[in-house]
Image 1 (cartoon, helix red, strand yellow):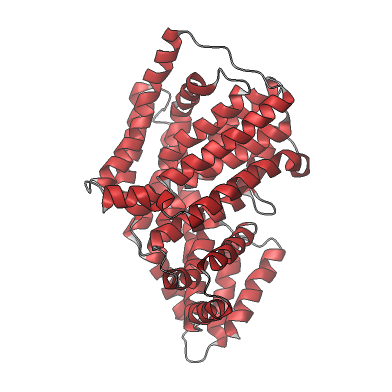
Image 2 (cartoon, helix red, strand yellow; image 1 turned 90 degrees about the vertical axis):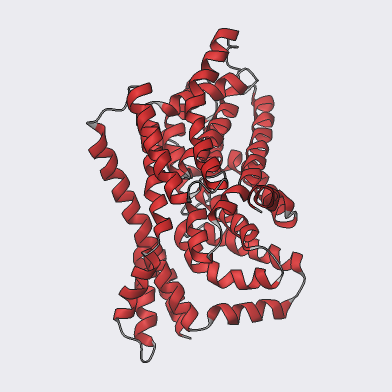
Length: 426
């Protein structure tokens, strides 16, 4: 009963557009007040425990990478590299948008950073070239979510902390699904390009092509540093994030020479504010998760769900539907902290590897990043394009459905997720 009251308090506050950290925090306090024999200081203690993780230091460091890239001129070179690879095809800028997001995903681990950086450059360019605003917004918002699939991934770091799972294996598990999502979005964009007769970009000369490749290689080395260091055991994920932040700073400062020392205080302040918001959400969600655990919610739900059916495929479908729904109204990090302890016992009872489930959960909730009413990537893209969300729905649906198809593929075909973790990390 106490857990139900806490949950209803959280939902009720969300309906009034109260910040998610306040919703989960207030719901936690209500649950603790209603519980007998639990000190009010438990709320503060559980918040501290939720934040007390060395691994979470990777979150601001990956954010720092994204800001150094955007201001240091690295994003432009990744876009130019993408243009060299796919721009010459019909509807080329849509393909460039997706491929650039895939490259960007391998460095920052943030979907919102992808939307702001890549979308800030490509959305105006696509509109100027005659692309419809609905397709421009849809392709930008959906491709940006690849940022939380292809490593590094901030939500996978959060899941690893919540589930005590290997973050290195989670990173490896996200590579193939991220590529599949990119391929699905490219296919939908190809259909739109044919149907609406979008233009191709001018073909590059051989010299221009190799110049773009050469300039893009230093940025892509960031991916090698992160993944190579983690898979070989040379770095922990947190250390890899620190080295990547230093590397992108050096690139922007000394190679591209667009990052000024004067920019550093502003960048640090921006990253600190964003980190504070994310970590506060994680802390209060951790406290609410503890309240649910005290009320034995995970065991009750696990028994109830397994009592309905023991069919693995039906249960996984129901879990996917639940997470898709949750993703439409709750931010990714607190959703992971709250629902991971509830759903993980169910999937482990089915024999699923926690790494496999972690990738499924992150991709489910990533779809919510471009789905109203919360969809931060969709709101950012619409803001850049100066168009309302309702005007983008027609183009948005095919991209949404393509990602759901990939989600079902990775849910029911475990090797798509587990092949690389098992191959590279045993």
